[in-house]
Image 1 (tube, rainbow, N blue to C red):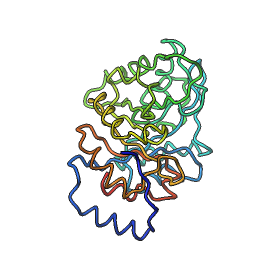
Image 2: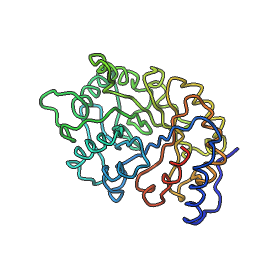
Image 3: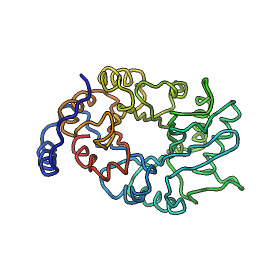
Image 4: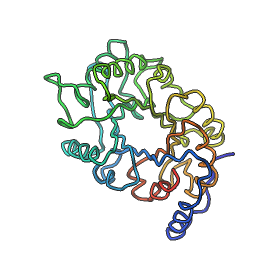
Length: 296
């Protein structure tokens, strides 16, 4: 069964449908209410605080740290005032939100040429964005900290497998001195047909995986088969079904199609995590998540 797209309904009809469907018994027993959104891709999306105030998201992923490796680092937030993000992270934490930093992205200016470079990047991430306190390391978000790191490895600057498994292990090692908390949580975002993050996932250290079912045509055509494969191959992680919020994006799924065709299937998986929405700017424009939250 391929991902489908019905004729767009009016906003009023969608609101009525969402209200009625929210009161119906779920098609499966796996409803989590979790919606992940990527923030930082468009200056006009509003602040991170505004995203956390919507009441529809449970996790925000700041994107991207798009340059790392070889001693160089760059944070691209599409023109947002970086100095204001730290206060927003603290606000989101006060609302019980998780906030992650995504590394990588679609560009080609990041790489891990050696195991030592993986160790260096882990050290930088811990001290610049998490609970590390090493002197001389600039903290873009001040004393605010993110809850973990998302691996978004769609680009990269060289062919061949980089030691992202070593980066994952190095980051996870920072959890060892802590009792009763996990200051470094690891997530991964991948196209359903991509395997660039596979080496890192093989460590078994990733607690959430956001699978994009809209980048590859074969994924949209065989989404159920791909979903079953991801959930079976990663039983220790929560798997999120990733969709675009924009009706202009290939792979867009109308909210009613999501409810009738996809939700009954994906929520049967024991490790169904929720829905991932790409991205905050388009979601703000279309209101996609305001419907999805009723049955995610």
